[in-house]
Image 1 (cartoon, rainbow, N blue to C red):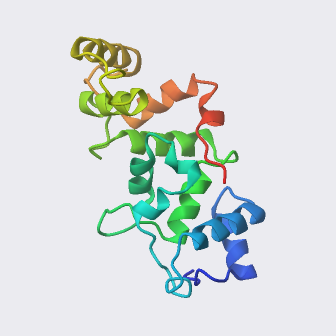
Image 2: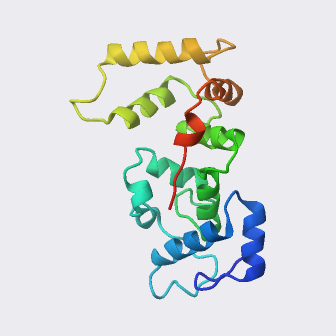
Image 3: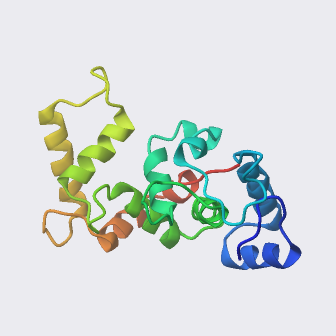
Length: 189
């Protein structure tokens, strides 16, 4: 689909609409916002990657505690550096859109929370998740005992097969019982 950043044809727009949960207006706005992240020299280059540092300047991501992880999960860069192409950016916005299904949202939430990318949420992933949510300052950080107890409680509630980790289906089961998840797992430009 490699369009340049400065234009978006009708056919490409229709294709993006078919492949995402986004409306034409949302795709056009995403294109405008992505183009704003490009330097003047980059604007006419096809399939340009925006470095993660520039992506993180977007107000919609700036205050998200998982902002770096989100970029990493949606980046198709072979360097695994969190840089995003326009299509990566659309995938990100699509998964976080109001129209995305519970299955899509929970799949990406799981990948974002799986910090070591091993396909399960273990104690280390859960500790990083909690630290992202509570902040890592001395005032907000949990004591080692509080963290151990919280992780133990999470696993007790979520680890159905009792293997010491939460897999995707166990995570989706927990999420399915959380009515606020779909409405809160979103990024709106």
